[in-house]
Figure 1 (tube, helix red, strand yellow):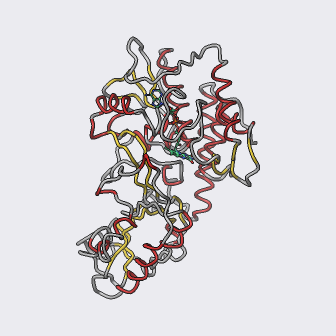
Figure 2 (spheres, rainbow, N blue to C red):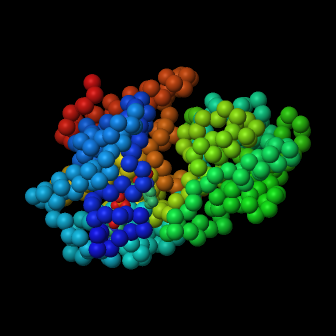
Figure 3 (cartoon, rainbow, N blue to C red):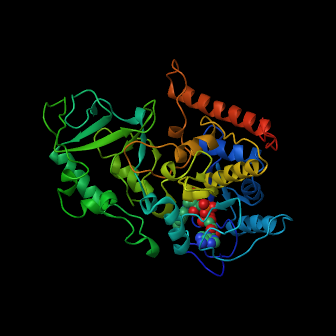
Length: 415
Ligand SMILES: Cc1cc2nc3c(=O)[nH]c(=O)nc-3n(C[C@H](O)[C@H](O)[C@H](O)COP(=O)(O)OP(=O)(O)OC[C@H]3O[C@@H](n4cnc5c(N)ncnc54)[C@H](O)[C@@H]3O)c2cc1C
């Protein structure tokens, strides 16, 4: 629809405009994001081809010259003999087509939001994401942490608790309130609601508001003192193996370096390594595990697939990978072939599983590719570094097999 109709963040009429950072993140092969980029490159991704053609020096990250990158993508799409680019806002699902892919992104136009809301049910369309940080389990000081579910027996349960004394809490509050925040952009103001406030916003409402809210200690007894602490930070397992933990209720607009400084003041997190930082964004996305089937089709209108960030993947390359899968699945459907998605052990399959598998409890939140999305390895491997190396090796091998089997590979780029 651009440039005739803009969005609050895009500035040009170019396709694949990068609205914020010009980095496609780490290229390190042993990282999930590096592996995803390799997989996309091996699948012949235009996004990765354009990124490599316009890259800037940025250490181990793949950063690009923003405008040139978008120009390369736009040029290739516009000159493709079988693609017809029509620049106009689409308010409804076009009629008369057997196959439609909607990829209108985190800033989908209000009219299309309304259409999607009608298809998925209003309660399954979200307008912002509220993401809490994830920390690596072996960076938590287990000598102060204790397992217990609220009112459950101490030493057992799904939650790992970090107790705070009144003095710890006071110090933490002072630092939290003074920390630097990322400001909301104009179009983001007022999008969060009471159930999902940034932690620093709740803290600013009163000295003890956190202790009566997300940090409430009721029903939790610190085995070290036999008493209920003044406040408790609860951590919830983020993956089956317990390699990473989510800081419950800690969605935040603090700047990244401030999150590390402030949250490392929490007893037990002094040496925390952050796998993901917290955030709160304007972001239109659907509750995909409820609204989509396992091949990204709308359950209520199976001739329509969603793709990109609107499905609940997060990030430039993740959105492109989702687009790749939606394209392949649609092509197979048109050709009358059975649809065989990549397995959850692969980077793309892990993203697909994240957006199409029902999640228990918490509200469905978008995710970038990270270790917590991959299924656990079999028993017997305990060293985290080794496990991670094997997870990435398995992801690479299985993706290559899938791409080769279905003739989708342009060949490995790294031996
Ligand atoms: C403000 C902001 C900053 C972000 N920063 C980053 C970042 O730094 N790094 C990162 O990895 N990810 C970032 N993301 C997240 C996300 O990865 C990107 O937004 C990514 O571009 C999403 O890809 P997409 O293809 O799903 O959507 P988009 O790239 O947004 O593409 C969707 C397109 O659909 C068009 N459109 C919308 N509605 C209609 C309609 N009704 N009719 C026709 N066209 C329509 C839009 O104009 C847009 O061109 C950011 C998101 C936002 C909102």
